[in-house]
Length: 367
Image 1 (cartoon, rainbow, N blue to C red):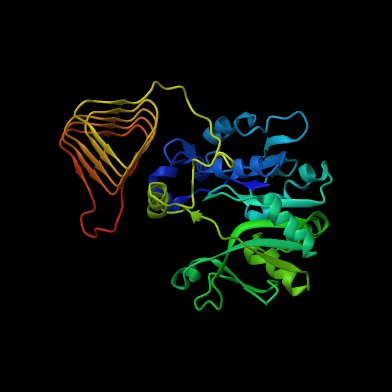
Image 2: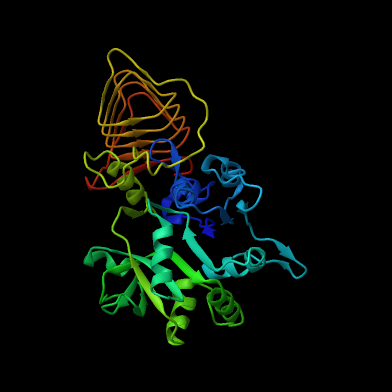
């Protein structure tokens, strides 16, 4: 079950008309491609995608799931937006609420285990190994965790564990964390436990219907066995403009743990048909990802350009992300910026951080 209904308000204008999981990433992908590709590569054949905020483009993008080999007669991809009952439309009020409202969907498959994922993180992970761990430990719930820097731990849900990695306490964004094991928002539940506790949570009028705030603490209070599954690969929560920029820049490192060229773990996507990119005689391109349909007449250094981007003569794009269809005029300087889809940057414009050189500038419609 893939939670993909988030608004992504910290991404500002990038999510004004777009669900966060549909935001472009890495020159040719959408954020949700990573989770869906992980499912496909892990051998998961049945995926329910729960959508809510600005879902139209995301629904169109996912389609019937053929890009990820999930267009199947039995199982495959099912998009699950909120729906109307006799009492009216019930919006998803939290992560637990979203799954609870789709218990009927889950029940038709009679699963033994249910994997719950977030559609707005960048990472590559074999979920089958996590399931093996869950079964080996005889857990009721397993939660994937990753070590984060201690000075950032207060931004996350933190798992306190014993020596066997059994979770003894869950703290939501603690001011003084006692562990740096952060929840990745990836859960494996035994189906019977999930159903029982979601129904219990739904009956509680004081609950915010959230896994981290309500369901997991209740499971701990009632003595259920929750295991932390340690993950050591690349993982990035791209919930802010700067973190989205950082994740794109990570792709340009000489040695990166987020390797898009790994043929044994491909990241699949839906891509429009575009002509080959054109690099003009006087253009200069260094350390960059340039997608199809781009026309480069200026200089591009350490940047990520999506399909159909134009950089005209005399312009420089440095340490930046330029999203699909953007047009950059002549003698423009763009540095440490994200340029939104279809934006037109007029001749002679200079875009760079004005006060703090570590900032990232966002140029997008509505900004």
